[in-house]
Image (cartoon, rainbow, N blue to C red; front, side, top):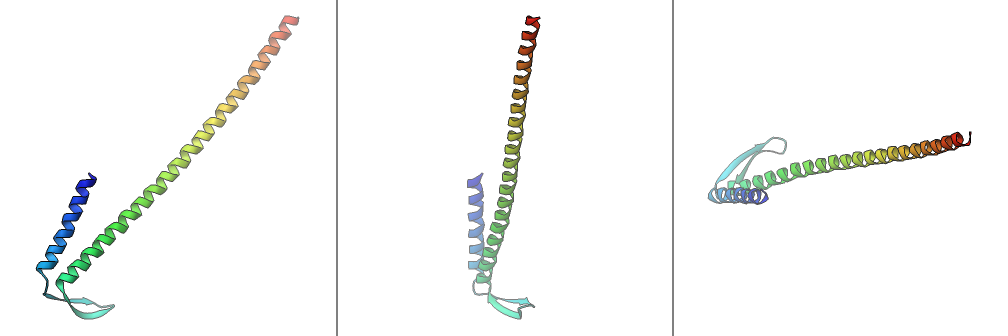
Length: 115
């Protein structure tokens, strides 16, 4: 699955590079009102930049998801450790109570023998 994803990613990058090469030399008029009203730019370069921005956005979203999964994994690990400690404490309490019961049974048997 990983190899397939890498192959698809490489093919997409090659497709963007090919598309940019084919459209090299054509000017595009861009408008982005907060920064500039109209700007003419080489379309090939623009496609490369947009492709890189898309790849960066995809990486950042994926990285965010990986961090979220790591946090969930840490929480699950802590919960499992807490549950393990609770089970150990319960087991220790049961053993302690069982030892007390055994001691009391032995004392009762001794008391009954002495009568």
